[in-house]
Amino acid sequence: MSVLLQMDSVRANGDVNGKNFHQEIEGFRKYLKVLNRADKTVQWYIHDILLFLRHLDNHYDPRNLNSIGKQELRDFLAMELARGISRKSLMRRVSGIKMFFRYLIEEGLVQDTSILTVDTPRAEKRLPKTLSQEQIKSLLTGIKGERPIDKRNLAILSFLYGTGARVSELVALNITDVDFNTGLVRLRGKGGRDRIVPAGTFVIERLKQWLDVRHDIGDAVFTSMNGRRISDRHIRNILRAALGRAALQLPLSPHGIRHSFATHMLENGADIRTVQELLGHMSLSTTQIYTHVATEKLVRSYQQYHPHA
Image 1: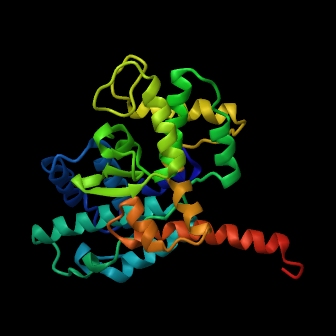
Image 2: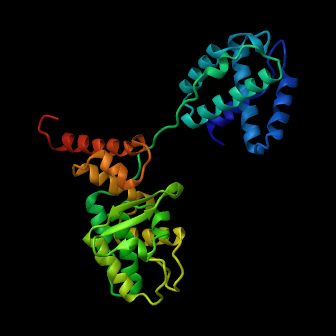
Image 3: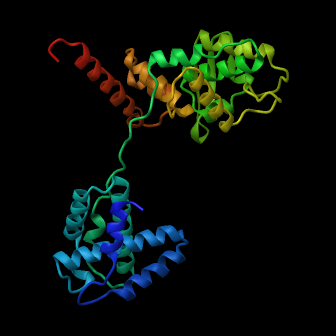
């Protein structure tokens, strides 16, 4: 248990002076059960509500729950942020407290609805883990050998990096989805949305080399050595082994290859809307996270190489 969580448990113990609100909290607990919320969710929501009520008791001495509005909740959240809790925990605090007051309003126990207008904090956007262009080169050149399994593994990693495909899109790829003459590939994206992307000569050549040596010719492009369509987990294992051979001790998932594709495209001057289309993102805001990655690298290069940085 973290130090913050231990402190929270202590802070949540005890009752609010004047009125304990046991009946309201117990009613809310039953309400969550009716909604079929997970036991862990119920536990955390009650925990967060008790923390909020203790905060009110210490700072406002509320006579009843109807006297609590959005300003009291905002003050509580500000103090929680000052304590250093994570954005994820803060989001859960807001969600549970607002649901509690929504329940009270529905039951006619509270009339002031202003607390429901408090915005839920947005989740922190973590920058995706990527490989540098040199690391990608080491990853691909590290797969050597003339065995079918070597040719397949090289084709898989080349395809992920050469197209920016999701792992699920690679798994679903059929031979009829690849135009070996034009180098165009049809990917089946999220929500049944197909898109056509260029694969590049180096990808097409490695696909051909793999298809020339594999034993069972079915619909799937990538299969296990026994001829079955390859799985997500299998691809993760292939990448892990390839990272080890390239002496890249990094906790990278296959999705990190997709991140690397997008970042390297932007670093080399690609338009962000082009990258959006290649990745199959519905919203440009989803793609914009890669501009932060590219900009960070640009700043580091500037600081390293500019004589007056």
